[in-house]
Structures are given as C-alpha cells and as structure tokens.
Image (cartoon, rainbow, N blue to C red; front, side, top):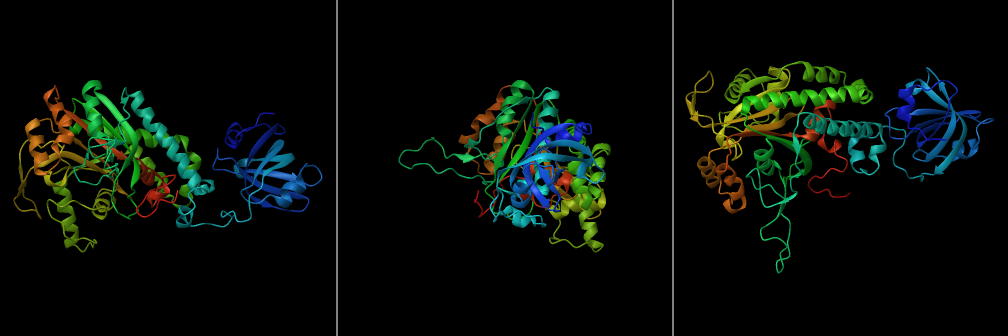
Length: 466
C-alpha cells in the first residue's frame, strides 16, 4: 500500500472508510486507556494528523501507545474518518501502528512551548517545531516564486561566483580566505562574495535581463536582529533601463512573490496570523497598494520635523547626507506613509561607487534644509514596516571617467575591478538593478523579529556550532 503524505490527505479530503498508510514523527500522545490519540506530523503540512488507536482493534497498540515518546518515528495503517474534532477535520482510525524508531528520553523538544532563543541553540532539531517548520515551508515557496517570476519574464539566471577578488560594496566588509603563504592557490587575495551584482552586470550586457540568487557574506560583527554573516540575495540586472523603469520592475516583483506565497502558504499564514492578525492586512496591502516614491531630501525634512514635534529616536542627529538607520527608515514607512515606500535620490557620498550620478547637483532648500548642495545618485531603497530596507537598487554609472574617479576617491584596488570598468568601453549604454535581501523579505511577510529564525543554520559573529 502506498504511503501518503499528510498534506495530500488533508487536501484531497479522502472518502470516509478509505484505507491509507502514513508514517511520520510523534508530536504528542494521549493515553486514554482503551482509546488513545497520537498527533502525527511528516513535515508535509503544518497540521498534525490525528491517529485514533483502540486497544481492542489496533495491532501494535501497547508497543506504540505505551512506549513511543515525542519525536519517535511510527507507521500507521488505517481508515480515514471525517471528524469535526480533529485538526484539519480528518483523522485516521488505525488498524495497525508500528514503532519504527524510538526517540531517546533526552529529546529536547517536548509539547511545552519553547522560546526561539532556545531553538537557535538546537538548530538541527528546530525544523520539527511548528513555528520553524512553517517558516521554512514559506521560505521554500518564496524561493520558487522568485525563480518563477524571472523565468516567466524571460530573465536568464546567472550563477555568479562565491569566491572572488572583488568587494562590490567598496566597504571592505568581505571575509578573506586564508591561503598558504609559500604556495598560494590564487594570484590575488580571495574572499567570499558580498554580492553577485558586478558579475551580473557583465551578463546583462549580453542577455539584457539577468538575475542571480544565491548566498552572500558580510564580515560585520553586528548583532542586530536584521543582520547575519551569511544570507541570500536576489539580484536582477537589466540593460537599457533607468531608475524609474527599475522601480516598476521591483514593485511588480514584490507583489508577484507575495501573491504567490499568499496562495500557496495559506495554512502557514493562518498560523502566524493567529498571534499577529495584522499579517493578513500587510500581505494584502503589498499586493494591492501602489508603493510611494519619496525623495531622500523629503525624508530628511520629515524626520527633522518629527523630532521638533517630540519624536524620540536613539539617534536624533538628522541632517542632509546622513546614512539613515533602521529606526528612521521604519518611522517613515510605518508612521508617515503606512506602507512600503521607495526612498530615492540619495547623496552620492553615502552610496556605493557604481551608482549613477544624477544629471546635475541640486541645491536643497526647505523648511528644515537650508541651501544644501551636493551630487546625488539615481538610487532607491525599498523600505517596509517592521524591517526597514529590504531592497537596494540603482541605475549604474555608465560613464567610464566618472566611475574611475569615484573608484580613486574611495581608494579601491583598481586592478581587481578593471574588468568591470572596461565594460563601459564596449557598448555599455545603460543598466540598472537591485538586490533583495531574501531573509528580510521573509521577515516582512510573516513578521519574524529575528533574521536568525529565517535561515536553516544561521551564521552570526561568535557562533559556528553547526
């Protein structure tokens, strides 16, 4: 008899009396003497299948009911029965149950509630919990939605290198790979990639529309709930477009993947919305509301005005040219605009070297900004409630001389990126692209407070247990 997954049992709504066969892990047991109940899960569904075992008609009753601990693997054979008392409305009346593998007594996951901090210390077991299991299920569907969007829109997937000599951000935050000093493997100092963008730009000049999706690494000793040393990035790059056209693509993309997750992960969303009902409205707003576009200068005006009216930030030193922190970003999208916003046209000095200078320097004069002059770049960040920045993107600088000047100003190693500069010599008319923090998108959709709970085996400073 074929073994069925619990998810298919719930979705197909098998007819009363149909005989089936399931196996999975025991979540809990209730020994009622003559009639007992087992909550069984096989990872295919957030819901547990209730197994009804009877002492006088279920073979293996004593072995399983009396011995199987939480976490044990069992096999159950029996008939489906619709039940308004069972989780999911279906239960299995067992004719036979077998203990396949007993869990030791020190199995750390019991029926009681465990904190997420505790679960991070047992990352090899935490996917068996409902919360982490649901997050990882949504993570899987979200990853598929990303590939689906780009493939349906004729993008080419490019697998950019993990080992590189480039620091795409120009910020010196890369993990360096140690080589044998007497017999080095590479002719340059290698590091783990911080971004696949530079490589993607090269391929966009051949295929027009490309994207990367893979792990990236940052050597930052940051212990905030939004930062990790290893995380995944989605980085599309498109030739022949500008920032305004890029924003259209970003918005279409975010709405598409959100809609896909809403349709495919209804049980998981329902689970998280039990404690946080606003999640459903947040998801609907992403899908249905247009994203606001706000100039950086206006954002600064708003923040300064808010402080004057009594708003308290941890950092109240707001000025034109400041690299805003998460608390400022969140204030703008949560308190002022009440939804996702594109904050755009940032000062050149606080953005990456490859971003295109806007046509002319502007002199900003407003209520709180007086005659501030400076170059800006055609860049935007997508800011969302609960997280802050989840997307950073820009039009790329296509002028070779301007790009070279910027590289020299930042004292970057020209030899390592000469190939990237040379792209501008060979038909590089224009290009634009962005990076989406994959885990941050997951945090936003499900209102997960710590990025370490969205990654199977998180990497953060001081922790390399798994």
